[in-house]
Amino acid sequence: MTWNKENLLDISDFSREDLKGLFKLAEIFEKYAKKSDDGYKPLDICRGEILMNVFFEKSTRTRGSFQAAMLRLGGNVSNFEPDVSALGKGESEDDTLYILNDQCDIFVIRHGVEFSVMKFSEAIKNPVINGGDGKNQHPTQTILDLYTIQKEFGKIDDLKIALVGDLKYGRTVHSLSTALNIFDDVKVFGISPEGLEMPEKYKNCEMAGTEMSKLDDVLAEIKPDVVYATRIQKERMPEEADVKKYEYVINEATLSKLPEKCIVMHPLPRVNELQIPRFGKKSRMFEQAFYGIPTRMAIIATLLGHEADSLKL
Ligand code: NCD
Image (cartoon, rainbow, N blue to C red):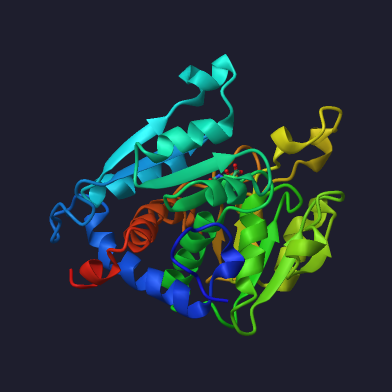
């Protein structure tokens, strides 16, 4: 598979080379992703272009970092607000997107229904980035996750990665598990409460347990390089679900059993499952969130055809 650079919808469209290309751009964009004394200057790579954020589900990081990314590239951003739009008058989502297409050059769409973003992209002309489609995938999160791992270890091959938490409804782990398939000798372990195991479709991991009270011991045995923790996605569960029984905690006691060089990642937001300091020795979740900006700058610049200009920076 290789990425067609027309839309960004599904992480399984990506080859190692595609990811390498994006990482190279992200590395360049890092010094333009926030203001610093070290060579920062505003870019005009996307001057005159408009990115439209269309979020039908809640978001802080994805929506905000796409916005920051486009602004850092010198472009403009519109944020469509479903709650005050004509959707409330009964207009269809399809008509709405068709209209918005003329108001922008590129879309980021998040929607609660699986595969809906792919469907929208077929009907509209502008490039579409999947900002999360229900419990299916979150491909740009995976790109920043892999970038974080690559920066930390200088490679992704040969690592041991433990995916922990809600592997059934969590879209970030679906895309991540799928993407890890293209690297060599990566061992992926899934540890989830019983009933929240990784669906077959995305499964590229060995299930290493469902008894969350034994999580620390299971991790001690695996000796992972990366622990990737996720929130229990209670908003995706049936109303009658007993969410309490799925709760688990990673804390300082867990960290004390992990190898010296192991890092802990989380797509955020964290709720109760990750009780460790924001910038502790093993914590990387806030650095990871920051990498959302340069990686999304790389994604936008590529989809808008500015790859060559970006490489000249
Ligand atoms: C995630 C999501 O929306 O899937 N958030 C994010 O974009 N970083 C994870 C979550 O909500 O648990």
